[in-house]
Image (cartoon, rainbow, N blue to C red; front, side):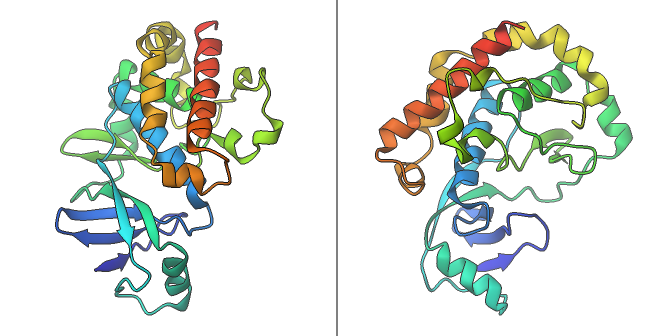
Length: 237
């Protein structure tokens, strides 16, 4: 059974499965399969950096999936999303943190979030849209579908593109950028080439193949190469 989530730009739905409820990002949404690729890769890297992200599972939706919403637009979206989609474990009673709770987060955690978003060029974590929840007294990161913007324009990517600087002045933690300067080197050193390759390997072939690449293996290697070159550029700062 499927229930529409009334918030979120990616038109997610809550899918009830035998394993529990999952907030499911749909391949047929406006952001498409590229956003699902970004969600998986960024979540995997986040966990390598010691950051919490909700459990991820692949959700198979049939073309005739049942919904509690009779909206024609949603029906069309579900039809376009038949096949493999991406679910995130529903965090019961999770909530958006209050400003004072964000200010109380320690510098090391803040630096890890800043470093992650700098590495994956995530411009979507702002004071207006923190994409961070508190659950069981712990911060959890969500909504990374807008990260990795380079993959929308592979034809413009060259060897120098991964080193392009990122403006973090609009970031949720922009006022704490000095903490990133102090922690960037050890954080960069904590990520290995294997960690980057493992993150890209987690993406199913069906997602890579759906974006028009001639080979899932080739696409996976391209993502890994870009992120490794970007990591190397950050190490040089």
